[in-house]
Length: 31
Image (cartoon, rainbow, N blue to C red; front, top):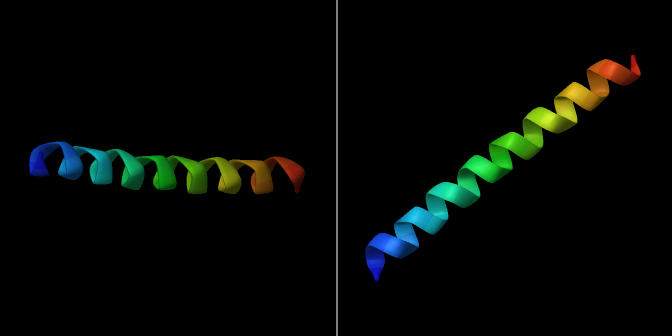
């Protein structure tokens, strides 16, 4: 069970990084 929880945390962290990258790209495109 702990292994699954660690995997979810890892996925969530990656999703946040992807979201931040997309926001940065959108800001660059708008300029």
